[in-house]
Image 1 (cartoon, rainbow, N blue to C red):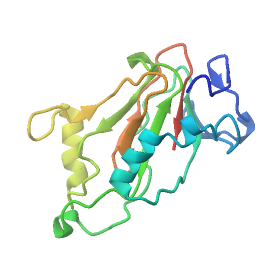
Image 2 (image 1 turned 90 degrees about the vertical axis):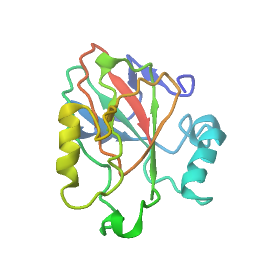
Image 3 (image 1 turned 30 degrees about the vertical axis):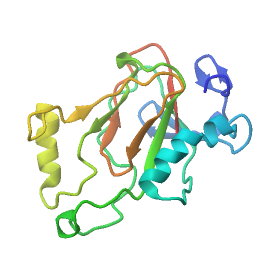
Image 4 (image 1 turned 90 degrees about the horizontal axis):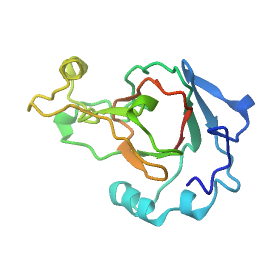
Amino acid sequence: AEDIMRRRNGSLALDAASAVERWEKRYEVKVPLSPPYTDPGLAANTVLLQLVRMFLGPRVEVDTFSAVTALPGAPDQPWHMDVDLLYKEPEAKFGHLPPTGLVAVVPLLNVSEDMGPTEFLLGSHVDVGEGGWERFREQIESGKSQGGESALARPLPGLGSVVLFDLRTFHRGRANRSPLTRSILYT
């Protein structure tokens, strides 16, 4: 992906005037739908499209294509989902519902622990009904799920790799304690 991206001093060469602050020292900029961002190896990667279609079906629509940057010194984000739940009824009534969307994160450099990787709360994409967030809060504080395994995942993806997740999953960017700007593509 780096050979596709124009970079300047570790940052994306995008219009900084259009940046929106998403949290302290974290900015999102819409990526233009023009070269180099429309390169098929990035925008229409066949392996990624096959995976997405496996989860969502044959018709796939891109809702967001942006770059998210965490500046040095950016603190932990609060836990959040990227969208509100589409289905408001508890899943216990219907069983586990399939994803309504996926998020693909493409790091523009090798992400290390001190750069503030994205952290995920495993299983949080399943609506467990009333009191669910309190149970998840206990898992976050202990770092363990009810079964005793880790409730948190914090992958350290390399340049050009992809982290794919259900958009209902609670996640947060960790603090960027490095001297580097950490940028990711987000779609």
